[in-house]
Image 1 (cartoon, helix red, strand yellow):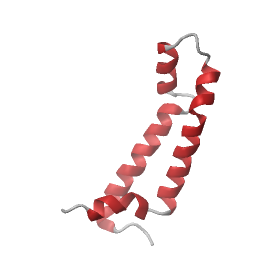
Image 2: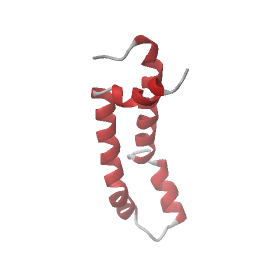
Image 3: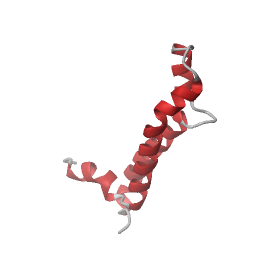
Image 4: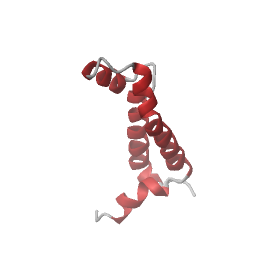
Length: 82
């Protein structure tokens, strides 16, 4: 089942937030990692990326799940009163 036409904007907004979050962690941009390195310059970038790798994997799994099963993202907006 696809996304109902009236919910496409909501679904796309949720997927877009996950994509932006991934873009702020994954290189080459990875602004969050650069901020962490700026706060703790003694810690190597490799160590920081090793620490955020599980979160990158979890976000990629979440993105795949939201794409394959849009009902996951649309459950809460559907149960909220309009």
